[in-house]
Length: 277
Image 1 (tube, one colour):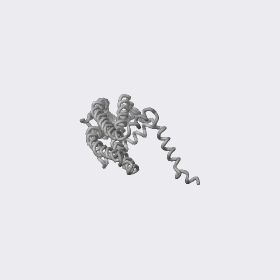
Image 2 (cartoon, helix red, strand yellow):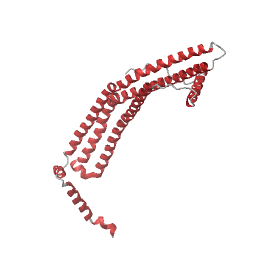
Image 3 (cartoon, rainbow, N blue to C red):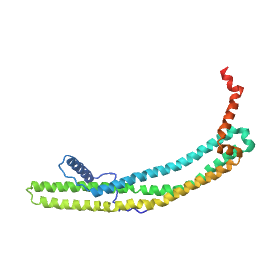
Image 4 (cartoon, rainbow, N blue to C red):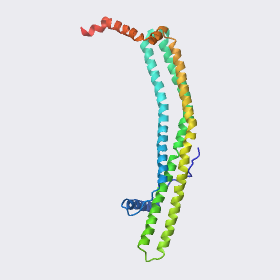
C-alpha cells in the first residue's frame, strides 16, 4: 500500500539554531494562549478527523500486537502439548506400550508441532503479520505531518496576534504593519495548505484500512481453519486406540461412575490407609 498522505521529511535529530528559536517562540505562543493573550484557532473539522485517525491508529497497533501474540501463543500451546504428551507417555510406562496409545498420542502431538505449526508460521507472517506491520509503519510519518501542521498553526496564530497588536498600538515605523501582515498571510497559507491536505487525506487513509486488511483477515481465518482441522484429524486418529465402550459410557453419562469405582478401588488398597496407623 502506498502512503495516502504526501509526507514532508521528518525533522533532523540535531536541531538548528533557527529551529531552536522557532521551538522557543512556539512554546511562548502556547503559554500566551493559556493566559488568553493570544487567540487560538479552533478547527472542529480537523479535530474530528484527527480523533478518527487516533482511534484507527490505536486499533491497528493493538491488532499488530495481538497478531504477534497469536503466533507466539500457537507455538506455546503446541510446545505445551508436546510436554504433556511426553509426561503422559512416561506415566503410562509399560501399560501404555501394550496398546501403543500413549506413544501414538505423543507422536501425533509432535507431528502437529513440527509440521502443522511450522508450516503455518511462514504464511502467517507473510499474509497477516507483515501487512499489518507495514500498515502501522506509516503512522510515524503521518504523526510528523500532524505535528508540523500544529506547529504551523501556532505560527499562524502568533503572527495574527502580532498584526492585531500593531493595529491596536501602531508602530512609529509605518512599514512594520505591512511587513507583519505579509508574514501573517504567508504563515496562514502554509498552515492552511497542510491543514487542508490532512483534512482531505486522513479520511481517505481511514477508509482504505478495510480493503487493505481484508485479505489478511481472510488469510487469518484460513490459517486458523487449517490448524483446527488438522489438529482435529490427528487427534481423531488417537481416539481409535481407546475402547469404544469408554465413548459410549461418556455419551450415556456413566463415565463418572466408572471413574468413581476406580477411585474406590484405590482407596480400598491397604497402602492408602498406612498413614492413619
